[in-house]
Amino acid sequence: AQSVTQLGSHVSVSEGALVLLRCNYSSSVPPYLFWYVQYPNQGLQLLLKYTSAATLVKGINGFEAEFKKSETSFHLTKPSAHMSDAAEYFCAVTANTGNQFYFGTGTSLTVIP
Amino acid sequence: DTGVSQDPRHKITKRGQNVTFRCDPISEHNRLYWYRQTLGQGPEFLTYFQNEAQLEKSRLLSDRFSAERPKGSFSTLEIQRTEQGDSAMYLCASSLTSGLDEQYFGPGTRLTVT
Picture 1: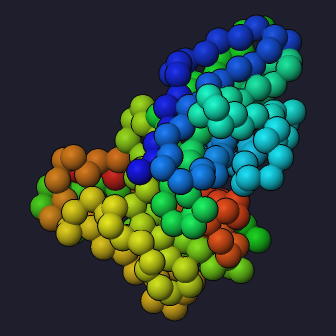
Picture 2 (picture 1 turned 90 degrees about the horizontal axis):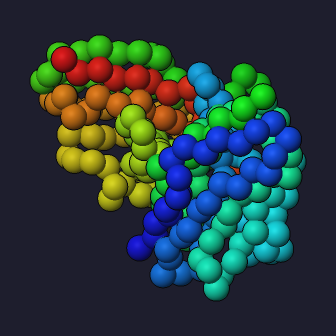
Picture 3 (picture 1 turned 120 degrees about the horizontal axis):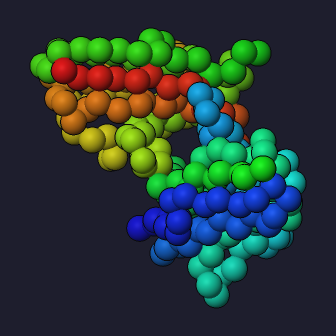
């Protein structure tokens, strides 16, 4: 069985500050992990994914995430928040078959000017 | 390519009625997924197709839910005898070939059951 937990349903940061969105996973098999972003009134869009290559994954818009097996974590970071980063962020996990996906409950990011 | 499209965007129905939603994936994409998303939750995986074959359907919510992709292109999701608890956003996504390819999501169909 697989699941993800996103700690913090709402995160607020000041413009220019570090963004840290937390995701912990549970998986009985080696996981593949994803971060998706949903801007208001838009569909979900892939930010980045981990598929067992490099543990530090770089994505679009300056975001990156690090897979830490010992901590079962895949936290999303961005060094400097921009107003356009305000959105809902979802972490997701699947097994190597990619046959089922499990999404977290999401974290709403607010960027304060 | 205009991306994944879903029709209708909104559907209001009375309890007990049947509803059908359509999803048109990106044209060269072989995989197609259906999800349900309720307020304050992440997408909940329902089923997926590889071309016309439905390879995973154990997580369809009940036997009132069914999906088809008859020619490996568009797909339909049907809910029979709708209940108020079925009110949600129904999302469709497609990807190129494998489950590890990026999924492109459509805008969703919002269902309201009165």
